[in-house]
Image (cartoon, rainbow, N blue to C red):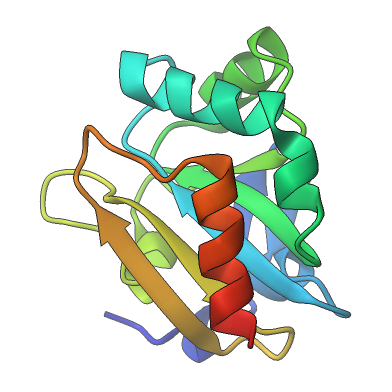
Length: 148
């Protein structure tokens, strides 16, 4: 597993276009990565639509938010547009970034969250059971706690 610092110049397809990891990271605040197993699966769709519907709770945390899994950018674009998601998605088909974030298992991406500082340091990460996810309020509280 390559540390995050080793892949800062590696480029990934995103719903914003091709970006290096250092361009994905916010320069002025922390970045939160939300990993999830798959676009359009029932639990992932419910999770991300819940985050969309309660976006104000997440926006109140001064972070940049990204979704990430091993799907293609085409799948991500359709998923984001279909469900009007307010945050962008990263395609990581080889799970390179997911591994560096500690959010990849041997079978698929873990459902989890990682906090990365502007300089590219992985500050915190947490995985949850595949069929559960933190509510927006719980996620906001978790990330705020990590930043304290």
